Image 1 (cartoon, rainbow, N blue to C red):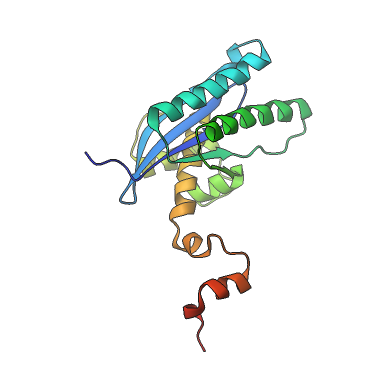
Image 2 (image 1 turned 45 degrees about the vertical axis):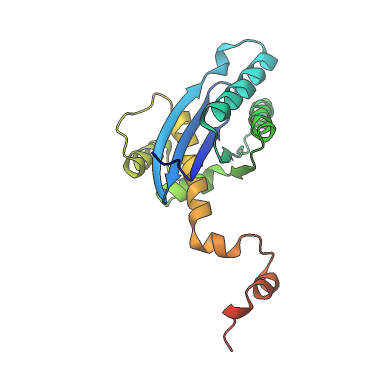
Length: 187
């Protein structure tokens, strides 16, 4: 069996429930590798929760050796304490990825939904149903956090496999694009 060209780990951060999803990409064919949740909310000590998140993300990276790491960016809510906790959870997940030498890419919830369903305002069930169709799995995970994380991983794949995104990657405006692509100018 040939090794996949990419393994993408997607994370939906949280201190009560953290979702994770892994996909493989081989010859531009995407397959589900694993999805699941960690429930740090059962741990009373806030610092132990963060340690559990760090260790779990590190363990997933060690086990599956992903080539890419994508995480959902926090959305802005009214509850400052919740935002602080979510930011900490996201931070330790990012630190675990960086500790293992992975580049980190963040996607807003709206961008993830848009990428998967075509609608940035889709609900979690719509995202899950589309993932089931795209990745050919039938089971309904008990937590949407798992499918949210899987959606982040698939969004990352879509963003990086788009011919448009490949053409403009690393380009800083039109002047830079023209300088890097002189053969594309029609006179």
